[in-house]
Amino acid sequence: MNYKIFVDNDIRIAETLPAKFYKKEEIFEMVKEKIFLRCWHWIGDESMISKKNLTLPINLYPEFLDEPIIITSDEKNDISFLSNVCTHRGNILVKEKCISKKITCSYHGRRFNNKGVFEFMPEFKETNNFPRECDNLHKFPSYNWKKLLFLGLNPEFQIEEVLNKIKNRIGFLPLDDIKPDLKLSKDYYIDANWALYCDNYLEGFHVPFVHKDLNEVLDYKNYHTEIDNFFNLQIGYGKNKSECFEIPESHKDFGKNIAAYYYWIFPNLMLNFYPWGISINLVCPLSKSKTKILFRSYVFNESKLNLGASGDLDKVEMEDEEIVQNVQKGIKSSFYNTGRFSPSMEKGVHHFHSLISKFLNNK
Image (cartoon, helix red, strand yellow):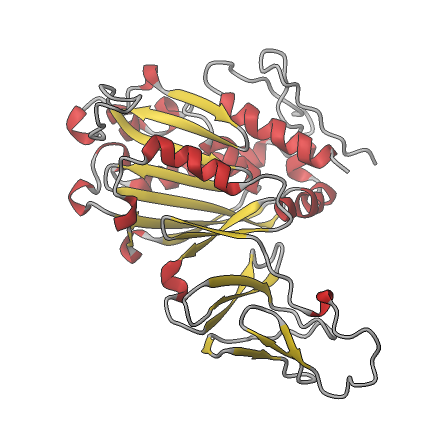
């Protein structure tokens, strides 16, 4: 069956992703290989691995990619992201967090250092051309930005370029001072396709209709979207200047009442910057109609919490989830296929759909 998906680059004539994208199991499987395995992913922050010679196993997107990974730190606290799969017979190497300079396989004793370099293997003296480069553990590209950790899986773009552009825009914020806030961090589960959640996030069009309280503090008529390579920015303007950013005179946004910078990085990461800190949404597919949302908060100014655009984020989340789950029910209809875009309000959704089309159609 042909699963080619075309989204026209011209938003004025383009049609949205077809309903089959959200419904077909075969397309959901293609998304793993052609999108998620070719992108960058937010893993967490430095506090996960703050001790020397710490080895931490993680599972990247359980129930979806299920990719076993080890995060290690050496004696200099340099962090590495390694495959948690032995290069001999595929055994999982590390099952629990531990302090160790070595990684030793419990199956046949193959040993690596905490940089993933092969060191020793019993009973292999007669093996020719051994060890080879492929006997080292696979090392993933990674990037540490403002204490936040990113990992690449055969990425088709450079996360550093994306984050540098974000830094240039919001660099006036004291991001080096961010601290995780467990009280504001939680997980949500929704009965909807992961991309529907992203669709909803990527436009402010629905705010007056879905978020009555949020609409009271945001200046909807000035809501603005900027498109860039592999990411985009929505700017939420506030009605109350005291609940907005204090932007320096040298900044391009000086004089504007900006309440929030909403950044999205392809395919599934949202970085929401408020006057108090960062709210992160990571959208984790579980199945074609089930999704987990990791909601994590990092604070640098507690006095600004729960004000303006960031007031009662949990209520906003519940409202978003209700509408997204309702759309999930709607796209099951035999009489819905595609829609059209609002050129003024749905630039972000069109950008997302265009990237999905591009990645899925690549060989």
